[in-house]
Image 1 (cartoon, rainbow, N blue to C red):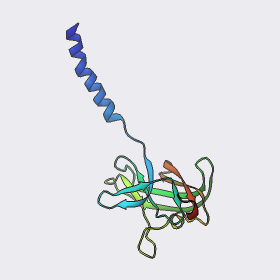
Image 2: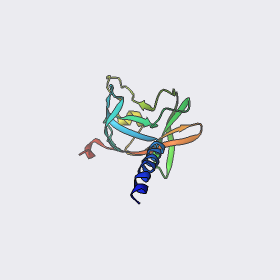
Image 3: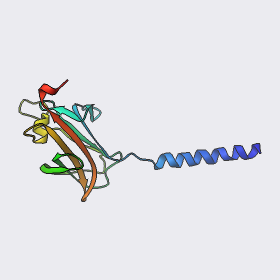
Image 4: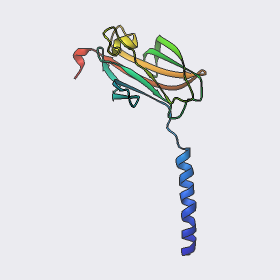
Amino acid sequence: MKKNRWMMLPIACLALGFYACGVSESPSIVCGSDWIKSNATVIDTASTFAISDPLIIQFRYNKNFDFSELEWSIYEGTLSQKGQELRTRKSKVSEKEGSYTIKGVDVSGGYMTAREMLHASQPGSFVVEFRSQGKILASKQLQLILNSEKK
C-alpha cells in the first residue's frame, strides 16, 4: 500500500505541471494615468477618470502576438450598449510583442487627457475595444467624470 502512494506522487506532479502550462490568462485592457517606460507598464490603474486626468491604455495579450495587425476602437456607451464609434485605428504589430500601448502626447508635452484620448465632448461611459481579424480580443468600459466630481 505504501509503495503505491509513492508511485502516485510523480504522476500527480506531472499532471499538475501539464495543467499549469496549459492555463493562460485571457487578453486584457489596463488603463491608467502614468507609465513606467523601463517596464513598459501602465500604473495608477483605474476605470474612472476625470476629464483632465492623463489617460494611457494598454492591451495585454499575455503571450506574443500571433497576428500582424491590431485594430482598436473607442465607442460611447457601455459594454452592453455600445453607441457611436468615436475613433478607430489599425496598427501593425510583431510576434515579438505581447502588449500594445496607446499614449498620446498633448501640445504641452504631457500625456493626452482622458477627454482628448476618448474624443469626449462631455462626461459619460465609453468602451475601448481591441480586435484582430474581425474577432474581439478584449473590451473595457471606462467612466469619464467632471473634475469637480473627483475625490
